[in-house]
View (cartoon, chains in turn cyan, brown):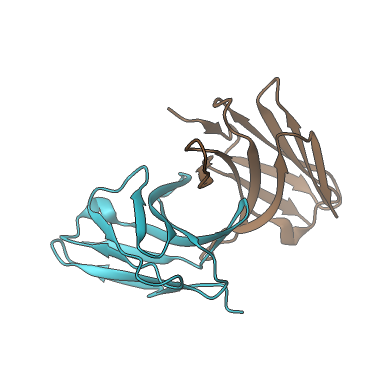
Length: 110
Length: 117
């Protein structure tokens, strides 16, 4: 069981570029989440999904898109990257009331 | 509008002593509370949780206490060990939609615990 895996671990983007952050879980969890963590702050929810084909916005969805075509994968898409999107991004999946997190992707937008 | 507050950005304790991390919340709809531990360059790791129907939950060296009337919870680590040095996040969730739940978590900003040998 690998749990929740995320790729890449680190990426530098130029302003206006786009990229996809990958997230995969092998625990057959229906619920999955994307968070961002800025320095000195807690995690803020970007998007979440309650199952394949179903996604919904979280607290800070602007500038991001998601899709959920399978139970295992929940990619996060950044279109037109901006410096404000410099952050660490965490993906999580949920079993009962507890969320389990991946190792994170550190993104720097210059 | 911070619904989950961890008012101490940092805490330093001696090895072997008790560490007490505090968390306050404002949303009375929260019914499930969790503590996560985070090392640098890693994702948060689930530590312990408590449901609002309980006032205490214990797991080895870790105990979480919930005071619903004060909207306050705390994490006790006894005895503290140097390997416990990390950022600790308090998180809370509430049933969002009637007839269903998706357990969105609201996080505090975290407390950096340093356990000195």
